[in-house]
Length: 63
Image 1 (cartoon, rainbow, N blue to C red):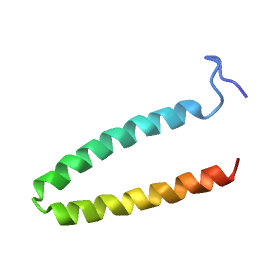
Image 2: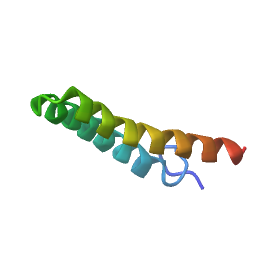
Image 3: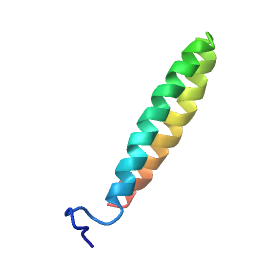
C-alpha cells in the first residue's frame, strides 16, 4: 500500500531507522577511537560487520 507521499507503507520508518543507525555508528566510531585500543576497536567493529554481512546474504537469498 502506498502512503499519501507515494512511498510504500513502512518505508518512512525504515528511513528514520537508517538515519538513527548512521548517527549511532558515527558516535560508536568516535567512542572506539577514544579507547585508544585499535585492536579492540577493530574486533568490536568486525563483529558488527560480520552480522551485517550475514543479513545481506539472507536478504539476497530472498530474491
